[in-house]
Image (cartoon, rainbow, N blue to C red; front, side, top):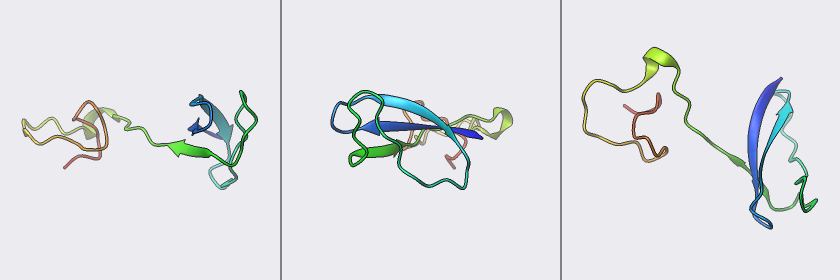
Length: 72
């Protein structure tokens, strides 16, 4: 099981759902019960030595820290 964050565009609730990596179903918002306006929230995860800490001044457009593991 993995944890995934979702955001409801109706009530702006951000919630976490634990589900199988093979389960691509859209969860129902626990606050307003909408499942039509729920989307996955993608977050950068720093996996220790995989960060971009080489002194580069480039910033990552997908994370606010500018130093996530997906930056090159």
